[in-house]
Image (cartoon, rainbow, N blue to C red; front, side, top):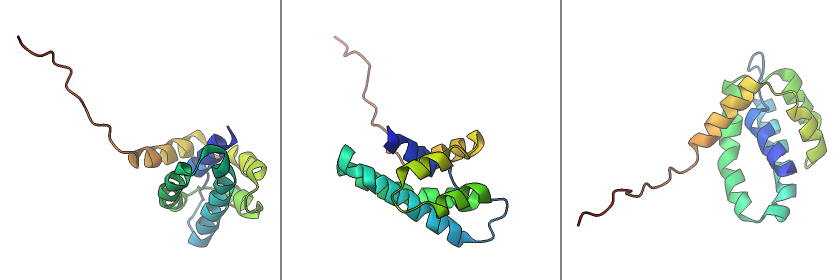
Length: 122
């Protein structure tokens, strides 16, 4: 469950009033990744590949969606791997930012193959 919260944070956590310092977004992504890594052992190593794919999308969201300074500073000030702190920071993310992040992350998902549902003719 906490892993889901951390992912949600990653999805919506990084909006700023002005993207003055892209470096903050890099630190934000590092902190979120460290928090996720603490959960990998609980869910399995396949999660590591998913996390690796998500990281660039999170940083893009942080910069382009302009995560607010209050949110980025909360994450930056958290200790690496501190899932509880990241969960608290997650509450600062607006629904709009969460939606934007989720949209970016969903775009990374492979499109399922369609199978024919037409019945064979006799």
